Length: 413
Image 1 (cartoon, rainbow, N blue to C red):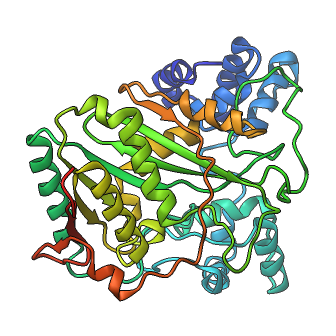
Image 2: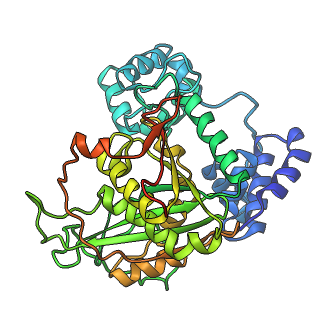
Image 3: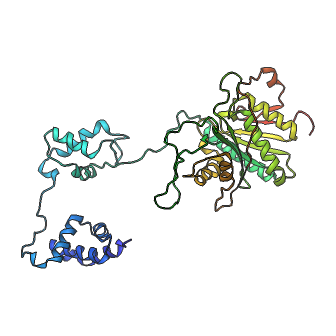
């Protein structure tokens, strides 16, 4: 690739005292010397149009074609904004219905193409080509931008206070030598020869061949990866579950993501990683989203946590993130995003492929991931009565007990 910075330095050193012809010839000489890609590099470095550099290359090839006259500074065609004084204001009015964002901001952006804007201006009596639209948009401070995720909907007034509460509880738990885990469900993925977002290196002209349509394979179904992330150890345990799409769908059928599935993933983490890393563990802090199978209002989640506490003898301290703040859950940006990067551009053709890709996820900060395929069946539609809730050994915190509570074993371990 041509280094445009070197051309820019040379042109800045001598370009100030040159006339129009000399500047064109100097830029053309730089482009010719640079070789392939020289015209583009010289145009970026000098600000001279590529067509002008092309004329300079023709002049260098035929010096006899140069005439004795040189265009004086400031000559040439006048800008459209001067020859047509109402053009800019008309374009601004034309853009208003398509303007997106706050009009008081210095940068605005539009959703109409250059060709459509030029055609609309032409219909209003202005003579302009589509290639001139970008210059006018620059004068009006318009530019294209992508969407930015900033709107969260309703915001609980105690949102920040809950974040501080979770952080303080996590620090205290870790200081006592007890684990703090973050749990959540990753996005469901289709199993089979389906396109997966992203790209990866392959021989030129040999992309992976995948299905044109993303219809669910009735035999392979979908995979639902449920993850448990150990915050202090920077380690994760993922329990993907796969159910064929042809399974029962109504009544008391089976479901991919239930409270039983989420708590069993915690049980799996305890068996394969937790007990070994924390042999003196007697308490476990769990941070989870406010909704989904592990939501703060899901009764079955509390019942299953009580069963886990009774089995293990652990005291479970649960803290839920406020509604609409799931992106703050640490498992999202410390585990799930890295799994997505690992299998980018890779079709998830089988269950074994899913397990191997998840287990091979690593980062420069030392992330390690275990993956255990969950083949159990979890019924959906289970109702939890008030009598069952009354049997739970659960105590709510003084601050938002619906988000923060502790479940203790009902029987000695």
